[in-house]
Length: 224
Image (cartoon, rainbow, N blue to C red):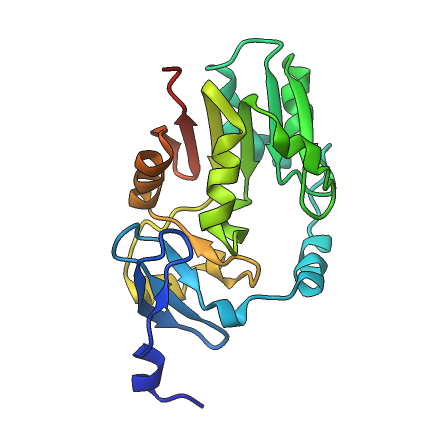
C-alpha cells in the first residue's frame, strides 16, 4: 500500500497536452491527475480497464432508441445543433454504441447520417471522410489517448462545420467534490474536462466553442 507521499509523487504526462500533470486526488480504485496547462483531469493510466473489461461495462448499458427519456436526454444536443444545420447535411455519429439513437433522431430531421463506434460499428473508412457535422455524445470521457482522439475527431469536420459534444464538465475543481462525484465512478471514464479544457481544445484545434447547456458543447470550425 502506497503512503500519502508516494501517492503525490511522480506526476504523469497529461494525456491531452503532454504537460506534466499534478496529483489531484485518489479514491479506493484510482488516482487522478490535473493538468495545469489544459486543466484536463485524468485517471491514472495504470488503472485503465483492458478492452474486454471495458466492453463488458458498455454491454450492460441499456440505451433503448425507443425510450422517450433517452431521446429527451439526447435532444439536449440535437436541438441546438439542428438550429445550426440545414436538411440534407451529412453527419457522423462518433461513438454511436450498440443501439444508435441520436443518428436516428437526426435522420428524422432530414440529415444524412453515418454511424461509427470503435467497438460496435468499427468501419474505419468512415474516419477517412469529412462531414458537415460530427456528434460525440458521452464518448470523450472514455478517451484513453485524447491527444490522438481529439485531432482525429476534429479532422472529420469540414470547414464551416460543427462538432457537437456531450459530457459532464468538472464545474468544481475541489478534490473532495471530485471524489464524491458520481460521474467519475464509472471505471471506463478516464478523461474529465473543465470549461477551460474545451477553450484550450478550441485554440489548439482551430474551433470556436459554445457552451449551450451544462453538459453540451458545440464547436464550430470556421470556413476560412
